[in-house]
Image (cartoon, rainbow, N blue to C red):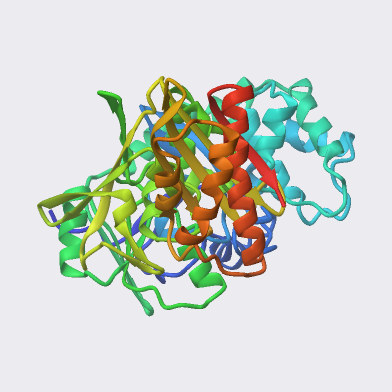
Length: 485
């Protein structure tokens, strides 16, 4: 079947077809410059402030699910087959203000107004899925939206009152849901998409086998899943990224069998959350602090691993759990322990043309102690300074097994093997923990940067192990806590 040569998606009520497209064209620029939809603002241009928030709908299980997204770092090519909704599309049943907008007006949720469209869209996405949210639901939904003026309380009160202004069942996206499903279904033709621009070409593989074929032909291509990293390469570093291979629509399966969870590499944090909450609840608070809702909707488990960042949030706990990654090149697959995948800063055990296909994660046993701790400068939507993950098995008061991994302490996510050796065979006591702390110097020589000094990182890493011990003794055996510098 010949490739399709145009990107197709719906923007509000309009079918968009693009047979020419620059590989680095962001949705924000497309909206503001090409369509003059300027309610979507540029604030940070790095997916941090939420002023550019839109909602993106895709078919999942026969229904359309809408999630918030940062238009500033999404590439237009990622939207093939999707429905993009901007603030201009919102309106009430009578054609006036939408219930979210009216609540924001009545509860004084806007002052300077620059960030307001982004807040409205985040609250709109929340309202569609949860018409009567709790305060914690609202705060979680707004993690990725920053405001300098209001202090947030008026916005939270507005969010609590939205359903007083109208029924979610009467919202246009719900009343027209069958039509939207039909429209998006009609866009799915199962073909590879190849679109050219002056800056190079963009390829959207038809399926995973086609992805393997594309990367065999173009082993140096930039692979884009959620663009939470690549988007910054474009907006902050002005990097040339062509040719681009879009994979966010692939490898989205999750399965649980024989005590292991297998995540397709394209599974987003939002998609993985329910499975994590059910089978590894110790990681729930960590997942809630990975970026904001917009980043969790787009960022993927596989992407967080493949980019090899030493401060990625998912790798340390997955290493502590003994996760493995399946790597694929053409029809050949190989399985690698996650801890061995990271070789050095910026270097992973990944051949040219090879890609991460899935991640297999053992569920911690009922007789194992497991916990995760993340240290940041602020609680929400912040990059890790130090992150520790701990899995310990204690039998008759003695440590018989220990796997401890840290992020932010080395050039890669890394196990604390010397600390593990110092603990195994010893009593699970504070005295043993204190005695093992000296082994951190054998495992890590952290760097100083604007997030934390080397001395602070080392002290924090040691204290996280002590905190893990105290919580296993005095609190629940399955724990996760967050710390703020």
